[in-house]
Amino acid sequence: MTVDDVRALGQAIRAEIGKAVIGHDDTVDLLLIALFAGGHILIEGPPGTAKTLLAHSFAQAVGLAFGRIQFTPDLMPGDIIGANLFNFQTSTFTLTRGPIFTELLLADEINRTSPKTQAALLEAMQERTVTIDGESLPLSNRFTVVATQNPIEQQGVYPLPEAQLDRFLFKQTISYPSADEERRIVAGHSAQQAAMSPADWGVARRADAAMIDAAVETVTTVRLVDAVIDYIVALIRGTRGVADLESGASPRAGAMLARAARARAALDGRDFVIPDDVKALAPALLRHRLILSPAAEIGGRAIEDVVAQIIETIEAPR
Image (cartoon, rainbow, N blue to C red; front, top):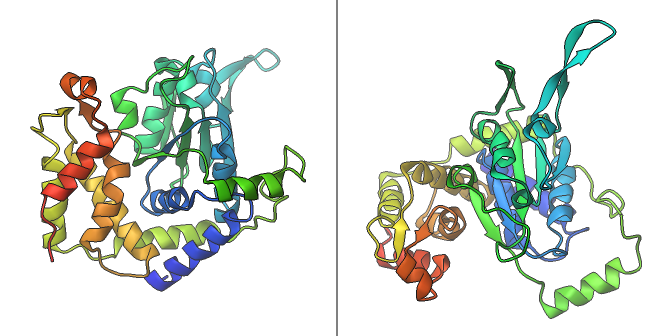
């Protein structure tokens, strides 16, 4: 598969998702980049903004096995990964796999469960394996988590631990649609059943496992010249020692930014990364990895403003 093939595949997937989901073009792009870069994505937005429909439509279009976990306060780790259950008829333990054994997992409203249960995803997201009673079980090499969460200001939510947040390649924040998009949503969706699936909207499968694997392999061949590498390192190091930030980004963030930039370049039909790839992805990659200082919080500073200032300060290669 060539980068032109990756670009064509991305365009076909976007078109299919657009049959069910109106707007959210930037989020669809980040979903594609996360899939081809081997990462996970956290989507934050108010209820009713098509987060779940978007994830389901994406899974349908890329042809991945889809699983969903509705996170609730009483959810336990075993409800996610599974457990060895005793069979009284055979007097043996039988492994019952949890919903995490899939390819694209929708962790819906992930911040409505306790940190103990959230932590059940850590090993799976980092190593694509699950450990049950000391036995390590592999997940698909295409295993991708699309997590949704409600804004932290809402009631009944638990902030995600820093270690959990760092497992996500991107955090995308979405808001309410524009007036034109909302009119199209009301006109199109009000005439249909409330529980329609992406397939009912005509979303068709545009890829399979072999195509996804080939696209991922192509992404790894995209060139990343020394000047762009130095630029990525400068951006990451530029988040440290900033007065408005209590904590900067880790070296892992730089490696993930490079992978994501390669995927964005391939989806654009290029076999080389340009500084604009890095600039475009930096906000979504950094916003959940940086912690504002108390003074900045009191002053009403936003993470996005600090990231924008860092990007503007660091000179990009030409």
